[in-house]
Amino acid sequence: MEQNRVRIADIAEALGLSTATVSNVIHGKTAKISDATVKRVEQELEKTGYIPNMAGILLARNNSRIIGVVMNDHVKYEGRVLEDGFVMSSLNALSREANEKGYFLMIKTTADIREIPVFASMWNMDGLILMGFCEADYEALRSQTRISFVVYDGYFAACSKVVNLTIGHYDGGYQAGQYARELGHTKALCLADNDLCMDKERMDGFRAAFAPGKALFWQIPALQKERSAYYAEHFRSFLNLHSTVVFAASDFYALDFMRFLQTKGVRIPDDVQIIGFDDTAASRESVPTLTTVHQDAAQRAKTALACLEAMRSGRECEAQIVLPVTLIPRESTRKMPCRTL
Image (cartoon, rainbow, N blue to C red; front, side, top):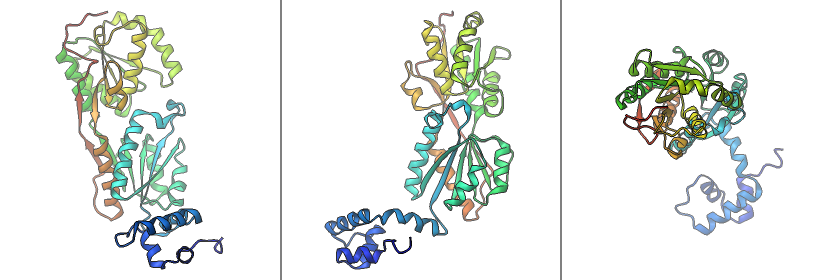
C-alpha cells in the first residue's frame, strides 16, 4: 500500500512543477500562482487520488478538526431520524458553524450508545455532539471515552467533561400557556408521547401559566400508526372536552394533530387553536402556519462548538447552559372569542 501512495513529488514531476507549488495549491496558498496552474494541479490531484489521502493526514494530527454528531435512532422515528424537524434544523446550524470555524462534521445515527466510543476513536475526533440519548447512556459514555462531548438537550445532573446544552423548556411552556390564556381560552389539551424530563417541563410550564386544572393531558403513542388510531378512538372525547386550544410538546405532534383535526372538518383556528414547540421549518410552511415556541438553532450550534473548543484547550466550561426561547404567534392562534365545537 505504501508503494502505491501518491506523493506531492509525484504530482510535481508529472506536471513539471516544483513540490512547493503543488504543496501551496493543496493548502490554499494560491495568491502568487496562476489560475491555470491551480487548475492543472487540482485536476492532477483528483485524477491520481491524492485528495482522499488527505484524510490520513488529518487523522494523524493532534487536532483532526473532526466533530462527530450522533443522533439516537429511537424507535419513535421509525427509521427517519434525519427527517425530524429538530434534527434537520440542528444539523443545518451545526454545519454552517463548523464550516465557518474550519471543522469537518461526521454524522452517525444509532440506538446503541456502545458504538460511539469506537466511532469517535477511529476518526481521532476533536469532540462529540450527542442528541436524544438518556442520562444512563451519557454516564456510561463518559467512562468509556476521553473525548469531550456536548449533549444537545439532555436531561441529567452535571457530569465531568460533559456539557448539557439545553433550553428553557418550562419557560417555553409557560409562555405558551400565558399566551393561550391572554387569547381568552379557558380549556386546553396538552399532547406529548411521555410525561418525563423536558416534555414534562414543557407541560408543567403550560399548566402553571394557563389555569390550574384546566389543561388536560393526553399521552399519545410515539408511532404513527398507533397514534392515528388513538386520535380516531378519542376524537369524540376530544369534542366533548370543549378544549379550544391544544399545546403539543413539539411542532411534529402539533402539526400531526392539526392534520388529523382538519380531516375531520375541524377548522384551525376557527374551531380549535394549536401551539407547538421548536419552530421547525414545517411550522412556517403549514396551512395555517403554526404558533410555536422558537429555539435558536444557530445560537445553540455556536455555543456547542465553543464549549468543545474550551474543553479541548482545558478551559472552564459550564456543565449546564440554558438558552432562552421565545413564543412566535402565527395563524394557528388568534384572539377569542372563537366558536367552540
